[in-house]
Amino acid sequence: MAAPQTSVLFVCLGNICRSPMAEGVFRKLSKDSPSISHVDSAGTGAYHTMEPPDYRTMATLKKNGITDYDHGARKIAAEDFNKFDYIFAMDSYNLRDLMRMQQRIDRGKPAGEKTTARVELFGKYGGRTKEEQVEDPYYGGDTGFDDVYEQVVRFSHGFLQSLDRGSPG
Image 1: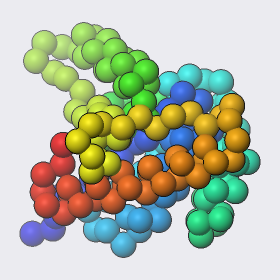
Image 2 (image 1 turned 180 degrees about the horizontal axis):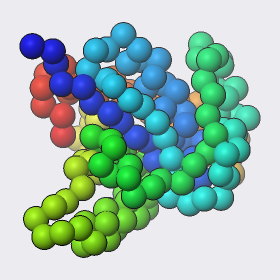
Image 3 (image 1 turned 90 degrees about the horizontal axis):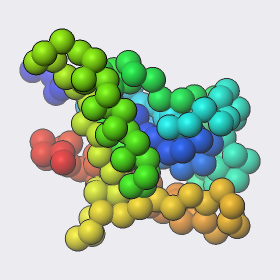
Image 4 (image 1 turned 120 degrees about the horizontal axis):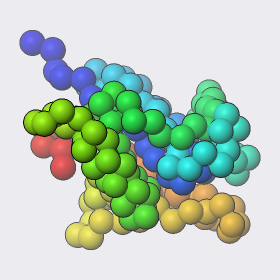
C-alpha cells in the first residue's frame, strides 16, 4: 500500500520573502520523498501579485544551492483550504488571519462541512519547546534572510520527520 501523499502551502504576508524561501527549501528537501505531492506558497495580502521573490530571498537560496526555484507571488485563495493538507503560517499574525479566513469559509459551507486543511504555525516543527516565529526580513539586512533560511531548513526537516513517523502535529 502506498503511503498517503501530503500537500503543503507556506504563507507569509506578501509572498516574496519568507514563504517562497520556505517553499524553495521544502521542495529541495522533499524532492525524493514519496509522501509529498504538492508544494506552493502564497501571501495573506495581494501586495506583490505575480512579482518574483525578493532578490535577497533568491540570493540566499542560490547561496545554499537552490538554483532552480521560480515563483510569482499570489494571494491565498479559498480553494487552498481544501487543496492543501497543511497550510503553514510564518508568524502568529498570518496564522490569525489564516484561521479567520478558514472560519469564514467554513461558515459559508453547508452544515457539517468544513475545509480540510490543517492551519498551523510552521515554527511548531522547529524542535524546540516553544513554537517559533519566522520574522519578516524585508526591512532588515541580508543576515535576516540567512536567519529565515536556517529556520525554514530546520522546520522542514522537523515536519518531514514527523510525516515519516506518521505523527505530524
